[in-house]
Length: 64
Picture 1 (tube, one colour):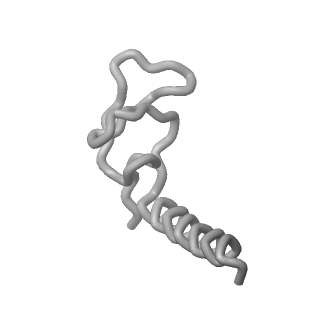
Picture 2: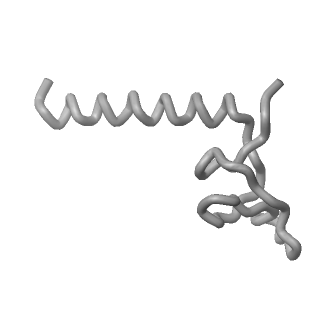
């Protein structure tokens, strides 16, 4: 079963006392606010894709 986590840090989050349409939760670690938590699986996949993209950018910058 997937756990819901903050999309910024992948940490726990809390519901805001005064929610707006765009900001309903706050990250426990970095205090960033966000609208929708994501699953730990989605967070892991996004991080993996970001690392792969960074590697491709480095290769491109080195002229490979």
